[in-house]
Image: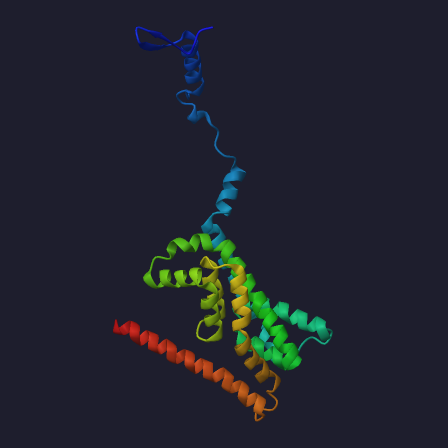
Length: 266
């Protein structure tokens, strides 16, 4: 049997078997000229699937869904619950659960939460109204977050190029729970805007939902109590609820004005 190499005069030469093997391997690995041109293109269905699943196609779908939801709100006018009341065939726990689900869907469709909180208090009283409103708040925030994360994040993240946008993204990505908790506690940032901004960042779903649940309690409770006691506008509970609504709003306006003043100063 011949070795892989033989030595002749101190010089290593390849054996015939090794040379033949190398030549065969090189022939097998060589790509014939024009072979790439003979590869058939991807099927039409595959190309359509790729186009439909592209980041901008998903973002377009998100915009269409949100626009349709907002149009549905304008048609059905959920604010009529404040005047017409809840459907009579729904009562008890079923009504509370149904309202929480409807609350979550309405927040995704940009219905103002103060209106929904007032309606929860007027329909179910303080305790059940607060539970239903908080459940709807977390549900709506989670739905908006998941929609934004699945349909909008890939297309929008490359657009975060400005200094303020990068700073906000860094804050939400690195300190998500703390930042979202502060956003929920102090009014000023729209609920839906905070949801979709968090979904574009790298913040996790669990800290987002936990911060939303904890941070929404004071403001939600104030509106629910105001709705429950609206029939007695001079009662202490109603006046305290109004104070709890007005003071954080005023504090948020002052903080926003001071931050804006500092930015202008620089």
